[in-house]
Image 1 (spheres, one colour):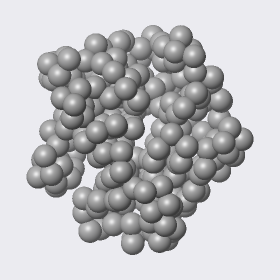
Image 2 (cartoon, one colour):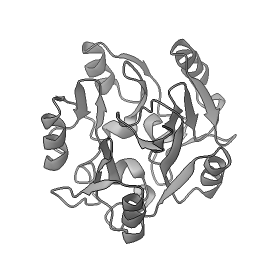
Image 3 (tube, rainbow, N blue to C red):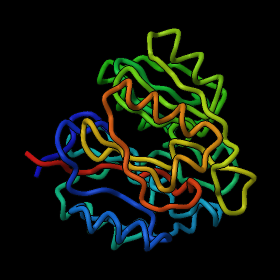
Length: 249
């Protein structure tokens, strides 16, 4: 097994993923297809509905580097056992927006998309040192809003992020938040419903047919040469993303 060179976009079959521990059926489904689930328990720092969301609490920097904002010692130990070097953010996450989105950014190609005034300084410095250009967007839940299919194709729940991405040559399918469930909120985001299993395969937490633009999503994925797997037969659930941690090789 090896670390991903590019966060969220494996080059080989994924062998371990970070996933909320609040959805045992999805955890079981991942185990059945040969993926080791690294369970993320609720954090006391965040609002209850998103307290176990990996994309709020973990920010992979590529290879074995990971910014870690959780208060769980067991999760910290599990990640270190896998070989991750955990970096502490400069600021402690808080329940209220925008103090909950310090790690909620998406690195793609030469760019980092996120809300500049809300992002943690450690995250910003880490990516700047790697030569990434920050593109600031109004939507603080940038990673939650985006499902990266590959380096140049994204499914996105936010029109502002989509416009910013299109300006730098990224092809974006904008989809509604309607049809994406997140308990305690009016809706969730498409990025929180998905995770790559391999370069040519992505999994979703529910059935794409339950989303108003399910057929458009399928057509977009087909155009990218990417297959999809549905972990449940019900509506899409925003579980805070399924974050690939390790891959074959």
